[in-house]
Length: 208
Image 1 (cartoon, one colour):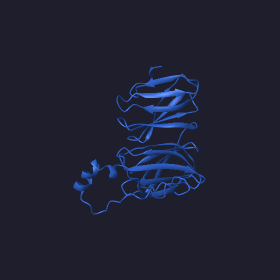
Image 2 (cartoon, one colour):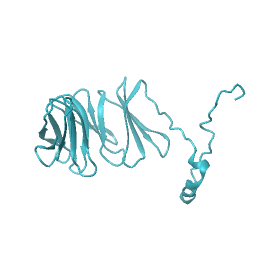
Image 3 (cartoon, helix red, strand yellow):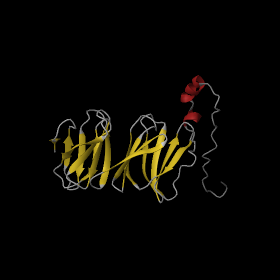
Image 4 (cartoon, one colour):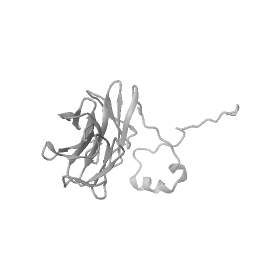
């Protein structure tokens, strides 16, 4: 600009026509102008604030949760637009995408519930014994694993539709849980700074 202020034209790049053949699209992967282009995701905002954001395993959808009011928004990256939004009954602590796309997801909420959603909306809720702090999903066993304000990790079998025997922990409460995609071990971070690892097929810790 004449006054020395930098101006960035984020929409000045060429937009690819919808009818362009897939072969020609792949051919553009070596085009520097195409690789440096910027495209905006329409409606990428929340009324108040965003809490959590995750991308589906197939890399095609973005899930975002916010509050005031509690809500979910799912964006389709191939269309650069909002796929759908959905209001929730309580704020989301954490969530897990259960399928490769947007078909199924589980939401751990502040009202001590896990809300299970499908394409058409919420279809089932179950109550967690203690306030949940984190949520993980073991794909190999189809289990939801909940770290909570208790010295144990709650297990929910999605195949059987019921709670399984919880995993006891050394910590008085569990702040974070995560499952390794490589070997399926569950790691749990306690509020006292202790990290424990579990094999969900066993009843005790694999190490700490």
